[in-house]
Image 1 (cartoon, one colour):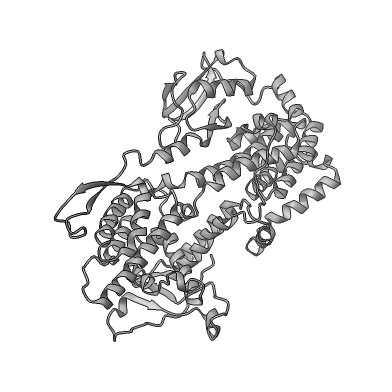
Image 2 (cartoon, one colour):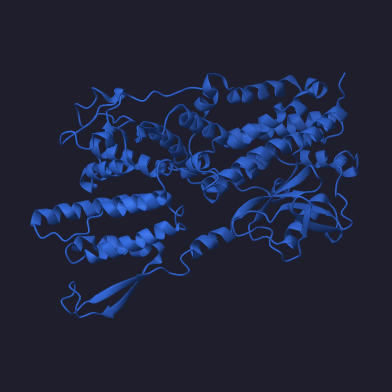
Length: 562
């Protein structure tokens, strides 16, 4: 496993030896000798190497440049450090600790000397600037965090109390009111020092419906739902999160070409426990988790489909697939992947790697995209192995799957691209020698060229080079990104003598920023396209067998071992 060497440490002490053990700093080796000109290119590294969380925050505020210095070299380095800190702070401190540290940095004492007033105002503005950057960076990510609500409420009171001494903070008071829909109530208070007996005292309260916007978004959100039709195969259904049992049952019945009146929806809530869902029962809980493992079965509890049965459904499914336009299939896959990926926050990578069990609710889009990648891979295997005749399998691979693969790459969707290749390269499919021998050379060559992108040699250089050339927006192969972060984490200590190793966190932040870069669309290269309703009806309910033993049994039935 590779390790990443941290540059040498040089202790900085502006006032003797005090605080020596709390702060350590150096400029990276790559930037030495490049600072003679203010116009020189800023390295992707900066002066900070390690320190306690509180000292790093203090250093951030001390070096922070306000609007006038934003374009300078020092300003860019300060912005980079600030971005790294806010992206990676969950690695070394809790949100509650960060809120307390920020309140501790906000000067609340009255200053009567003119110079002190100016210095205090600048300090307050820097703390508020950091808070705005944090709120902007996290968007809706922390809106439901109780610690953040209490923090903003306390900060509002502090800033409002400072308005008399510092009228320049009025804009910040207005901004704080906008966050979490803060209300101002006016009551006459003749003793108020801010009004000389005339003005109003403002009280703060949080709106009870502060999460309404979040709930509205949630109601329109599509999620992946596994509906098992046998013990080892399911339909991967794309449904809205408020779906009820009757809607889901009707959709599955249409996909399976079985009368809905013959079916019931059962949730396996624990081993041996069954819950019969009534027509208007919601399938998902408030946390967007299904109420249990969902099974559709006949009313006599018999399976809807046996994958080993050579029935008419299996004979017709390949013929129906071959009528679909492969570009439209790729569009449908990409649209769904993009909807999930575009709602994903870059900090999810960090929570998933470091705090997955504590903060699982923060990583729903990331987990869903990983699930989608896995299910597309299994879908490819399922469709090939459920195709009963050799000639149809050849047609399916060359005219449908390989063309869809090419279209996914053209649409800059590397998540589905990798999933399809992994499906074709899986043991149960790759062992079908008679099938692969019948694939024309032209399609074998095309597949081989596309497959080179997934070559893992030289740390996946082929993928990294190809992906770097693609214009944004684009969808990366997330498992590789998670692997990179895990290698950085395991190859470097988070703390050196109780000091946060910020060089490590800078590397992790660079990985997280890749998500932001992939989501940006500066020149209108939109990734989402309109897909046909026929194709959408198919891709919204992909038939997946997730039991490897069953897949290999199907494979050996098609081409028995010699």
